[in-house]
Every structure is written in structure tokens, then in C-alpha cells.
Image (cartoon, rainbow, N blue to C red; front, side, top):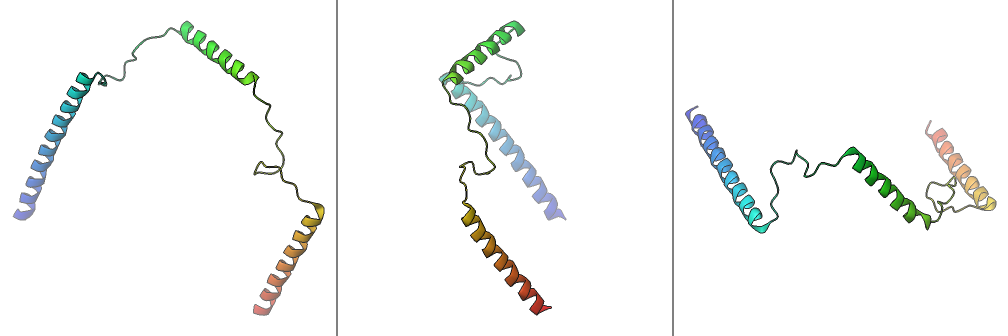
Length: 118
């Protein structure tokens, strides 16, 4: 039991040292960032600037106008067909009949195998 207590105490001291080391690293990083000019502020909850509702509305209208101008030159979307792959391949009636005949043959073979087993 004493061994467990000693091991637990050692782990706690190592954790405390690791936390101190991480804090020192964080301070060093923030110091270098501040010297470099790319420092990140710790107070990220506050916005950098406050924009009024009227200004936000104007900005939204301007963005919508930009999108409308950009969309003028675009082509209308293709009409959606029944296919899910979007390429619009169609199968001829004869090809469809061949596939149906082959599928019926496979089902017949499967059912014949099940009758034998039963």
C-alpha cells in the first residue's frame, strides 16, 4: 500500500511540474507572437469592432447585389432526370429486356436450388 501511495505522490508532482512547464511554454509563445506582431488576444469574446444594424443591413444588400451580378452570366441548372448519378444515361428497350430476362433466369436458378435443399 505504501508503494501505491508513493507512486501516486510522484505522479502528482510530475503532473504539477508538467503544468508549470506548459504555462511557461505558453508565456514564451505569447511573448514571441507579440514581438512578431501576430499575437492573438486572450479576450476573444469581445468583437474587434461593433457594426450597427443599419450598416450590417447595407453590407448584406451589397453582398446580395454582388451575388446577383455574378450569377447573371451563369447558365440555368439542368433539369433533373430520374437518374441519381446525374449523367442522364438512358437504356434502350432491348437492353432493358435482356437484363430482365437474365434476372428472371437468376431468380429461377435460385428458387430451384432452394427447392432441392428443402
